[in-house]
Length: 363
Image 1 (spheres, rainbow, N blue to C red):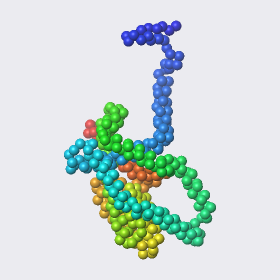
Image 2 (image 1 turned 120 degrees about the horizontal axis):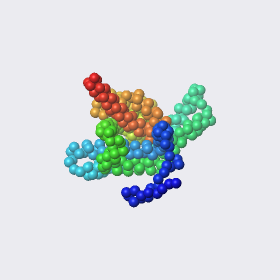
Image 3 (image 1 turned 90 degrees about the vertical axis):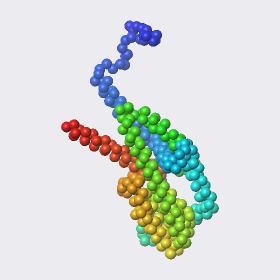
Image 4 (image 1 turned 60 degrees about the vertical axis):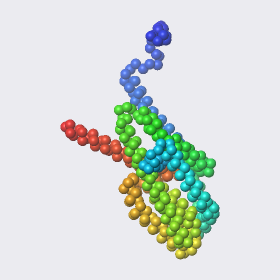
């Protein structure tokens, strides 16, 4: 028979063993081990289910790092509060975007429609030529392949497949980035608090290095985007290639995605060039070669010395895997993810080497 007793807090506590209490120490140990493995499996499943929101949050952090880099750069010349510097960076960004689209808005709007028509005509010509050579499947086969590809990729990319979804995603990314950029130390302290106390110092060092690497990477990307966009625009305009403005803007935007972005922009550039004539097509090819050569052998080596040095094959491989797993947003974020993982692994390697050196010194 159980008894009720009072403790020092004045609360009645029932004596006696619980009917489901496990008294065997070995059984309790195995239950704890099973709970750990079950928790890890549940966490992995939760990450898989929430991969899209996690990508949006990561994109917001990347945008916050971009804003933070601008705030730090502005702080070297303007010794004012961080909030005011962030406001200036945001206003300058908005002014640049509004000014660019205001000056070229009508021209770009017309060129977008013209670009779509031109690309459709060029694609039709290429498909007809390939069909005559026996290298292209029939129309029914093409439709079947397209439906199969879209059905396999639609589950992962349908959430950004509409204009409303894309605008909502961009809005959330911008809001998250602004909140984090306003006071990043609050979120840094929160992350450190979630880490065991004995590992907080190492965690803080790793996060600081990852943030620094991400800021340098984004600085290099922005510099490359501006350079490629402006050079492409001027070169195509000088050669009389139509739609030079929109091609320059697209080249600059696609430069954020190395390797793949350059290939897509080059294909668009050459297709539009040949639509205007043989000479314009050759000029577009020359422009693509010159711009990419300048970017690959002059601009990137200079920027790489002060930013992140990542092998091209590693970058391309991660882009392919990220695009297959996460869609277009994964492709755009593949480079920052790779750079941060690389930085964390380098820091881990330094820690292991330091531990081995201390062990050898003690021996």
